[in-house]
Image (cartoon, rainbow, N blue to C red; front, side, top):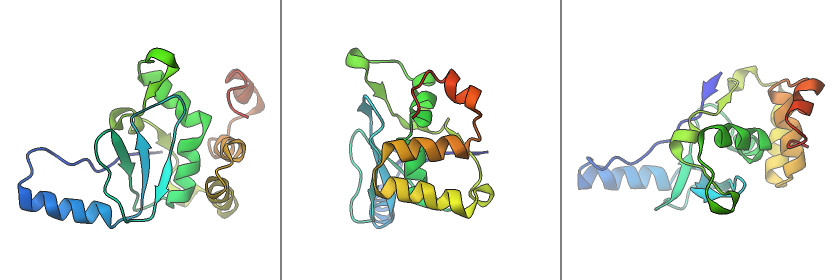
Length: 154
């Protein structure tokens, strides 16, 4: 399993290093995730914007970002975050980097080409049901395990 991580700007960086980091981040495709939401809002950004306050981003050298977007849009990812995050008023969760990093996913090389396509297509269509179904298959959850999730997935 691989852990999701994101590059986070560090306050100790010098101004010149910060500019280089800003350029590197803004020119790279990434997934953008707002800090506080009821459900995961994961947006694919093709490399034109720099994420600012209360907006986290995920990049990957291994995973195709659209497929990763499907996983992060799924109820399974929400369950990962909910198990660590405190629930705020109105049932909102904090999708902070510290919680996103705890989501465990298989290595990309271990994901079948068919499942890769299903994940990517579900994310591009923003079809949450398809994201859930493909993600449950990714985690190889049995019918019993799916039922234990209380119908939250699918």
